[in-house]
Amino acid sequence: MKKISIYRPTSVDEAMQILSQHGKQAGVYAGGTDLLVRLKNRLEQAPTYLVDIKRIDNLRYIKEDGQGGVQIGAATKLAEMADSELLQKRYPMLVEAVHKISSPELRNVSTLGGDLLQEVWCQYLRGGYSCWRNGGHLCYGAIGDNSYYHSAMGGRLCYAVYPGDAAVALIPYDARVKLATPTGPKELTLEQLVPGDLLVDGRIQSHVVRFNEILTEVTLPPPKSGLRASFEKLRPRGVWDFAMASLALSLQVNGNTIEDSRVVFGGIAGKPLREHAVENLLRGKTLSADLGNQAAAVALTNAAPLKYNATKIDMAKGLLASGLAKLNGAA
Amino acid sequence: MEPLKAVLFEPVGCLAEFPPEPFHEIAVRLYGRKGKGSKSASRSYWHLLNLMESSAGGSIEALEIEAADGASVYEDVLPALVELRTMGVRCIITTSLSNAAAVRFLEKCPHEFDAVWTRENAHGIKAAPLARALEAACLAPDNAMFLTDTAEGLHVAKGLGINAVLMMNDPDEAMRLALRDPSGGIVSLHELPDFIRLVAAQNARALT
Image (cartoon, rainbow over all chains, first blue to last red; front, side, top):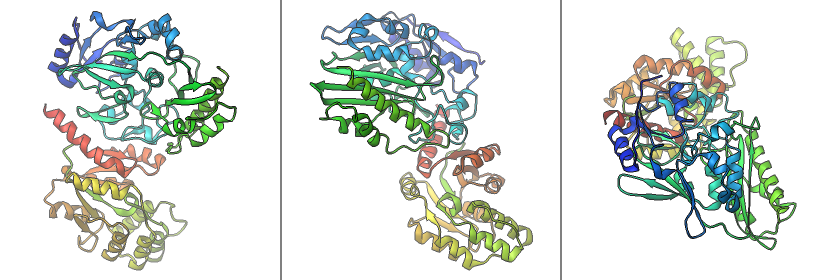
């Protein structure tokens, strides 16, 4: 493992100063369940200067915002979210999703910010291959074993999927994030935060956060009455594994009529994939047993599976049908 | 990798799906090749070039034209070429096909390339069109990339010091070719502008 230096700032401003000072050689260190693994795997792209933000007091909380919404500090541990009565009461689908992230041990360490901004878990990147995210110019996942960690919806140089579950589950609640930046705070939707592979500061990453910016908070607006939501996740094992396909689904229901919806797939693309075609189909429809088949028929029509992962599309469509069936029976 | 200023394209396998049969037929008629031909036009084409090179023989232009007529330009090619042009990246055809076959192909691929080098105006096959393209454009080899989907293509480009970039049409073949240390690889032409932008960004990053 390469030699590293650790800074322990006590304020966000100090942390940003250090990040700016070391440029792209520095990285934020919170739970470490992604970052330390990259270092141990000797990845060229792993940072040399770690900016440990755990000593910054005001980044770890779950609190009401006074208007019916909830604010979650970026350094809040996933286990704390999973155990939060406030979140369970207002955003039960988010808690359901957090319970399905990794394992209890890792949730005790991992943070919400880390889950949102984690690096992809492509076995070629993590195995030290010289791929696009690791100093090279080729995606081995596109031509090798792409059955698990890779996109079935096309790619842009890198074909790894965005691996996080929290972002997928936050989008249906119209959550937003706050970033601290050298030029002042910035607020984004989750879709803006994680738009998929893009070039930022000369490297490919799934999110828009620049090298000298820090994710500080996730804000959830007050839950709407009549909202039904579910989170489904398919993975090879019951714990620890990442999604081969997942779905966060919310329906705004009036009587038995769907007024609005959010359909967000995870594990199949380089970003949490919001499927507007299905949302348009569902708008104005009455909940019924057949709705799942109708929705699946219009879902993911622009799929572009790689050699070994077409099954992910079938999985995602299956999750859509079962999610709608679940919410149909959840009156 | 140095900043990329030009892309050298071999149409066969990189810009279009060519039928393999005409190339195999030339190998059969002129060089006594026996057995079934490859299903890959690129492999048939480069195999033919190897035969031409080793015996200093020729080709059958009518069959090359037949191949060009049967070519189907990949749908992502023209948008990528337009984007490369707006980026100021030179796009040059470097092929071992004849002039006539190249012209016939270009009728199917309506883009104004910066130059077209064939075995006739380059006076040779394989490396010759690439070398002439570099020379005429005053390009350093490491400022150019050659897209290819064959081992021979990689070998030729690397021999000239050009960045040999894999066109990863067939995943299994691409995985084998990735072991030959290409400079990079793309799955689709639509990735090419991003490839060049990222290399530029990496160079800028290295300077800061």
